[in-house]
Amino acid sequence: MMTNNGHSGLLTEILEQETRVWQALVDGNPEADKAALHADFLGVYPSGFATRAEHCDQLQAGPTVSSFELTEPRLLQMGKDHVCLSYLALYQRPGTASRDAMYVSSIWQRQGQGWLNLFSQDTPTAGSIPV
Image 1 (cartoon, rainbow, N blue to C red):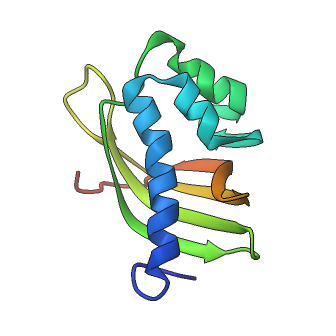
Image 2 (cartoon, rainbow, N blue to C red):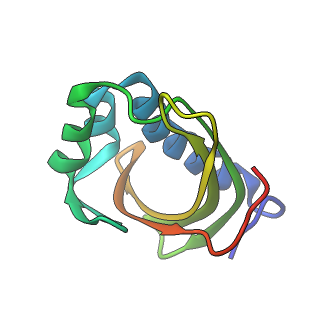
């Protein structure tokens, strides 16, 4: 497992990719969201499963996140073309005064010179987390 020390170049690269997905949620941009997700993307959320189309469709009504911070990142190499990024996400929904927190694990697959998000799972936090 890689953390911030060691193989920080790959961790930084994958965090940039993950940030693109979150920024699409802030911008309400389904095209940018779709560009970051693999055609066979599977999301596993407290509300159920989501395909790439369902993940993108949530943005048809506009942004779903107003701000975010990705903390405590960890990277697990899963072969030469796959990695799993896990982190704690602190985020705020539009029109709310408080931030929420959840743990996220995302599997990224190398595609040519870039990366696509193949899988993502959100896990609600247990207990209180300082936000």
